[in-house]
Length: 188
Image 1 (cartoon, rainbow, N blue to C red):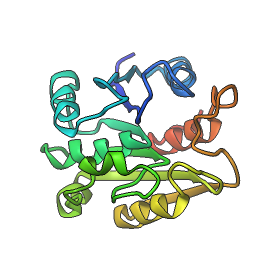
Image 2: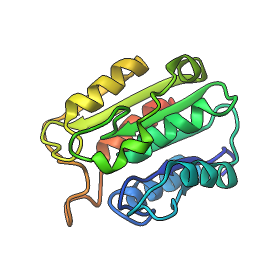
Image 3: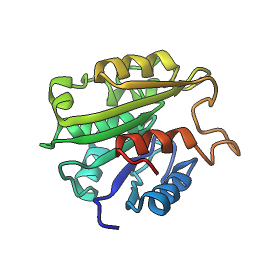
């Protein structure tokens, strides 16, 4: 593996070993020969933006051209991280995310109380894809679509998938791997 790693940002009440994250790690490392680092944010049951920002600064070896993957609350954390650092040529994949207060998760308002400054984010990104499911009850897809529009992103709306966290049904997300390959400009 000679490429810089892809970083995976999990969401609220999740951890690095949850959902489809280990499966995606295996696909990326086995098929694309790229290191995949799953972040493990502190106290994801009671997340605090400041501690998540500090964790990113301590953990990520940020460089131009890196790829960031976010799920749910991890999506806005990706955007915060990008806005706070000087980068170029980033690839970004965001799944079931939001960037504004969301009525289903008011406990996460501290992450959205200061709007994302897209004038700081957009110039740093080369390729971005945003995904959601039509039947997502946690982050209704219109929130994710609005974020995708502000990012000028390719938007992929799956007919089902809920929040991609359903017990027993969330161990794989082939659509995310396909989109990641496109972001990395890989044919295999």
